[in-house]
Amino acid sequence: MTEIDTQKDFFLFPHGNMGLKQKVTDVLIAKGCSEAKITMGVGTKVGNVGDYMVQLWPPGPKPNQIKIQLITKVEEVEPEGMVGLWKGVSKEDVESIPLE
Image: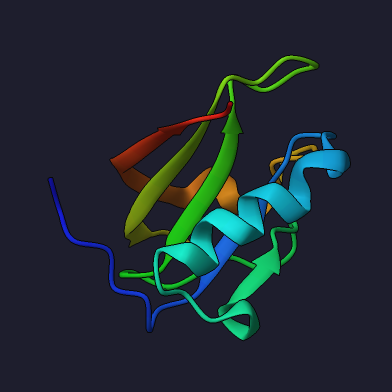
């Protein structure tokens, strides 16, 4: 498993589960990430190669894990729907943490 670089930026996508935002933030802080490096993901701004996308997974009302993904490629695209510019972001799974 790839080691997480806690100096990078983390873009959080709770997929509508805002009640779990603090729980995810607490998990990332426990892994050594600074709260200042954790921002809410938006469709108008993407991270850089080496940053992380953090999602509650699966999307919807009953996620059962936190998925941390490394951004491996960022391509320029026309924004599309809620995904926006993230449509052009390639990523690979780094870690999955069960929600308890």
